[in-house]
Amino acid sequence: IAGEGAAAWNIHYRAMARQQAGDDITVLSVGDPDFTTPARIMDAARDSLYAGNTHYADVQGKQALREAIVDHYRKYDVDASADQLIVLAGAQCGLYATAQCLLDPEDEVIVPEPGYVTYEAVIQSTGASLVQVPLRADNGFQLDVADITAAITPKTRAILLNSPHNPTGTSIGPEQWQTIAELCRAHDLWLISDEVYADLVFDGSHTCAASLAGIEDRTVVISSLSKSHAMTGWRLGWVMAPPALIGHLSNLALCMLYGCPDFIQDAGIAALKGDHGELEVMRDAYRQRRDAVCQALAHSDAVTAICPDAGMFVMVDIRRTGLSSAEFADRLLDEHGISALSGEAFGPSAAGFIRLSLTQSPERLTQASLRLRQCAEACLSTSSECL
Ligand code: PMP
Image (tube, rainbow, N blue to C red):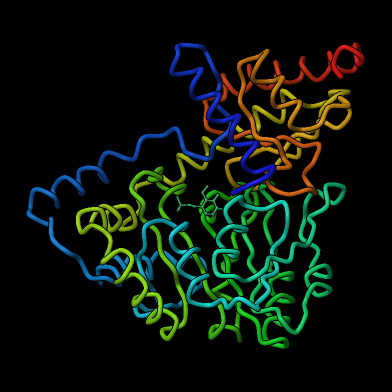
């Protein structure tokens, strides 16, 4: 990961270093839930571990976990089967493995920008090229399917989408999905859909790409328990795809991983089996946090928050300050002890924005947002000092 992406991550590392040195830093620069994994999920891992599940596990993933994932998808009108699933070490591993199995050096992959920071490196690791289509700030960063259509060439192999979206919190609606499905059919393309924030939709509902009719043979859905169950560190995710592609992914997983740890998969089964209300509690907490940030930043002359429908982030327009997003992020950390990522880390169309993670209490987020607002408003009144 190079360029603006790498520069923005420096902010995060600087923030962590200052926090470790004892400074009071509000870290809003990473999408790692601040919640602890629910106790019953940890209990399941411990019980499995002490039951002796310390051996190699099924490379494709335990049948019981794959069945639990199948059940989990019923709420999204997806009727999958366990042979369409492989369990991998997080969605990140799913993205990488899918790219290795699907892409050749001459291929192009259409990806909206701003977008998740690892996509570029993942695609380029195969020799394929990334063709970026802009999500426009003046359109609330909503995807315009016409831009995707215009980007298709004879070399296009796949469209990689992320809904709900990091960093903007926008979602792709059913009608847009329908048009995308038609494009994939008409141009013989794969649809790779990263849905790690599927369970964090505040307003409206999630459409899963695997529910789209007529493209089941070319749809790959990638997700994980990282965000929904506060399990980033467990590294447990999956790919849902046609069985032939799952076969290739299994071969790769054999060489790469030799299966995910058995007791961690048992924790995954516990996470997905039954309704324990944790998902709703966390989703409500994120919604409350989103509202806290949007309220604290409302009616400011200097900043505008784009209030997201989903996910764990809020994009804040700081263009009126006259600073670049990287300069503003620096100032926010150096002078106010708040770490946020520069929008440019996610793509040029997010220049002039910064991304705040909703990974602190509403009180702390309100405090941080008010300080951010003051920082931006000071730039308006003393613009020469600010520049
Ligand atoms: N995709 C997106 C859009 C993400 O934001 C993240 C995590 N930040 C991932 C994939 C990777 O998630 P995981 O922890 O499941 O590897």
